[in-house]
Length: 150
Length: 484
Image (cartoon, rainbow over all chains, first blue to last red; front, side):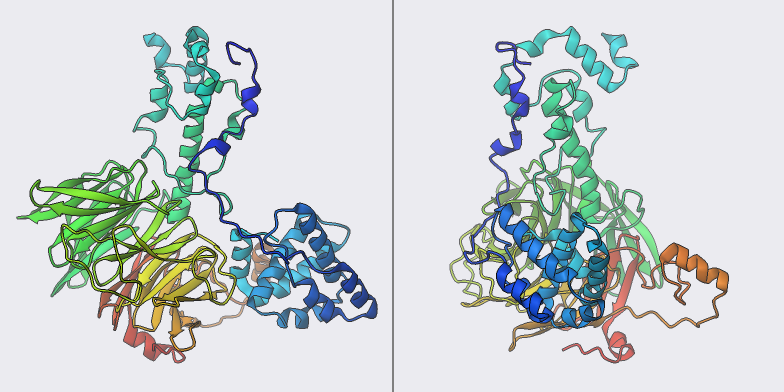
């Protein structure tokens, strides 16, 4: 503790914040990446149009915002779409994506792995297998090194 | 206090020192916010050169954060007065292991990691560093390599070697923050110290095409451009600092001897001007720009620079390897997010990038104006073809196709063993990798033909092996390969 005030409050200070050489990301806030539209997706799921729901869910990923609520909401929507897919439909859905789409899908899959619910892991593993077949190790490396997380 | 120092453990000594000497009470609280080394005798134990090869390397330890806050791991200890010391210590130990991880050098690998060579017909000579403080020079007689020289001067691991063929000088740089220029006097190589004025390890070094200067990339977030001053008979260096924010990992010179490409850990690849008016005349305009004062950034990749290419290109990973094409109009770089990108200099610099399906590539080199060879953690070199008109990079093919071994029947026991070990009951009984290199490839060098029409190139890797590849025989052996 400090001699004059006998307090150890300075221990709670994060010294790295004061480092003048600290690396700060250049960040540009893209305005309309607010995540997919929940109501629209609900409609499509009810109608049974999984492919469109899938594509819409992967549009507008909230990669640029720092607001965790937006990211949580987007994740929940995407996971709902992914879990309501039938196993046989997974492969054509993955094939319809382009390179950056597969990367984005991988990001969501790993994010979904972080908080497993009842049987989400099983479905996510199937998605992972199909996405890996298309994206390869590179897509997983891009999930690890991405600075803008979904 | 003599007995005190001799047989107690380091932490015990520090603790006892603390309780016996009250000096720390007089240090104001803000002292702990400053980066100072405490003048305690025990501090020497942490900072002696014996324990650690270098005072520290500021390499990012995780892809996500370049400057990890390591205070938190030691805040719980009672040795708060040594907080700064511990912080430096743990950053030392963490970054030490990270060095090995990110440079791809395992502490146990015995043989070559960095090599540089020179071809004097009829024999070839190679300078390499076997992951220690020395540089060994080997000469090829016929088919055997014999060691002819050992260059011992560095106090730390040698991280970069470059051999200038015309003037027959070798420059080496190491983790001891120094660079030495070696010249052959008679039969012996004599070193000349170059003071780089850096406070972190030097990481990579490269002679300029005319061999009158060289560039050193370092962990202190700057590039040192060194040239020889005749009046003082001494190598002088100038720094390029802005806007580099992290360790410089790779360098490549443009053929006009002035422009320098640097890939660094702040996820960007940049082209700088390294124009030194003392040693050369003003360069003519190039596609990268016409005004080239020293230190000017002519090109920067990434979201804040020009990024019109396919894929997000959004600052993905550390830039491991950079290479200018033979004409200097194209620049290729590989990054840790498994992408390879090519930029063409010009008013509307466009970046074409390819996200590959492989593990990250560590090194890249142009072999013709349109084709590049890159290699990395996947242990085999691959070919990429760049289409200038369409501005696209495509995967050309794997360059290391192993010979088909005869398939023999696999017993039921082996099948179950495979299932147990590798979760597949596949037919192959290959225990290791099928590629020639058994570990990541860290460097590709063009041996013959230059970067415009390369005929042989060689790769060296963390497995300590060096493989020479012949382009013509590759073309004939792999049918789909087309080197444009």
